[in-house]
Amino acid sequence: EIVSRDWSSDVCSSDLSYTGNGSSDGPFIYTGFRPKYVIIKCSSSTDGGNAEWLMYDSARNTYNVTNTRLWGNSSASEYSYSGGSGGYDYDFLSNGFKVRTGNASYGSNTSGYTYIYAAFAEMPFKYARAR
Image (cartoon, rainbow, N blue to C red; front, side):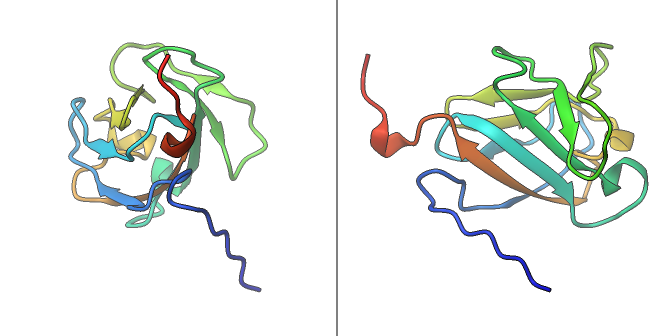
């Protein structure tokens, strides 16, 4: 069975992958909008934390650092990491998101690994109005 999900580029980012750098100053992923919801999965490996589907949203963390996640492939409850050493840390920015973890065991920034993602806009630009 094949399942397909299709989204418009004004509510979902069109470039759907990034490469990890292994640094706590991880890659910035440009989406063109502030994310409301991001799903991340390693496509290079299924070892350890790289096997996880990571899900983050702006409802659980209303300001940065965004570090509360859900697992898409588990019945586990949400998990917040507050150890300060870059566990599950992300920043949701006005035009994308920034990976703030260099710890490879957490499955989102192993150096040289490719990660696929889907990022959904908090407010799609075509609907945004000045305040």
